[in-house]
Image (tube, rainbow, N blue to C red; front, side, top):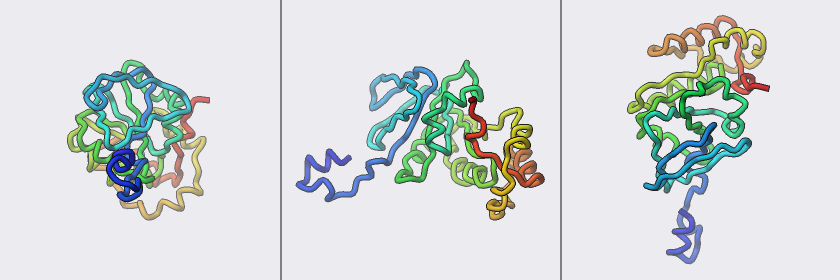
Length: 203
């Protein structure tokens, strides 16, 4: 980390340190974790995310469901989407972002928890899940794409056809393992519509 570099060198910038390489997380309810070998608690606070630098170590219990979220703002305001998740489960929401960080992928490789991906309902978002996220989840007990029961009704009411024109490069994607996801892919292709995840928030 940069403070360690400063302690050993006269110039803190002598060695590159990616200050924002790590995990941006959020919880809906108080969650017990092990952080750098010590028991700690994460607390919910709407409009915020907790950043954990990659030099630290985060461990969670096996019954915690990890939810990977494409848009960081959805993580910060996950309370608006809590109707999509069971009240009887424990969740850790993880911002999946390419901005200055790839540590989230290393962390995902090491967890054995259930994983749910909360992305946009378009071919580009599904492609990220299938070809970037799923290959990192070999140790997970299960993984799936978040598909609400009423998603097709919502998409017909709130979707955007104009955004579909940007999806042509992903027309060949298929899901071999998840029948519900393949059904969604077929629906998107047939109707030529897309939906951003933000449209699912509870107003």
